[in-house]
Image (cartoon, rainbow, N blue to C red; front, side, top):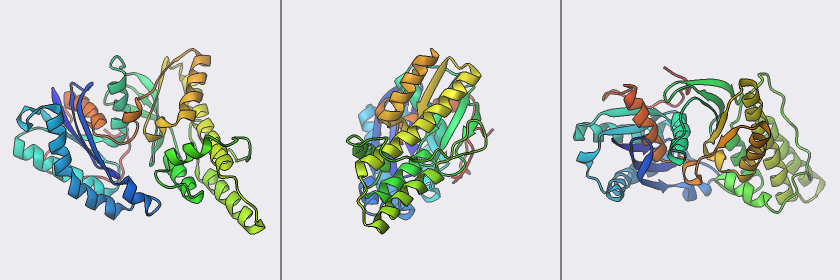
Length: 335
């Protein structure tokens, strides 16, 4: 079964074709990240306009690369929530028009469920149930994936998401956007023990909090300026990266030990972080459990993951009509 997936929840306009939820036939992305970097982060209005300009050509290219005409597509899947509402609506409206014109079923896909489905593209033998941490620019969740379409949240951020914290710290240090890769590059030559950053306290055994950690970095920079001192950007980047990845790894491994999970997974944009991957590999080995990581090209926002999850939503009978609307917020465990 061929699913055409559409993703436009942030600054990537992406379209892909995936066969049976596992085999990627094409995956195309038109990103406005370079332009967003001029402003230190995503400007929703600019992102929405770039989606409008790019989505038709991106869809055409995805079909060409897959070697399939639109008539051969069995269904159209679209990320309808959560995300920047203007950006989401571009993808949703394009998908509705395409599905209607081609006479194809329309499948609504939750963006975070798509991130989880990216694991199926990298590990074709992976099947639920498993434990997964989804860490991205807007979300940090520890989720029990009970089936392809049933999820139970065990823990989450109570304020900023991990990716958001990376972006804000990167801007504070003058490293640019997107923040995750920029901070990681700077951290490579830094000492993670140079600055003692706090471990934010939070209620909930598996919950996390990153607002205070972000503020602590800002305070280090501001205090240095007031004293006329220099801040070592590599050292502060390394100290921040170590602290945030240590918190994420500790929480996921704690949940794995408590639930006796035989398999743990990582998904989302922050899953590309080498430090986090390394810490989880070491922790999983110590616990004697299996760790599954997505391929780097499927960590960030992409449409292949939307098409993959769309396949399983289709099998579960989760279809939408022309009245489908985009949503800025929606929990991953909605029914």
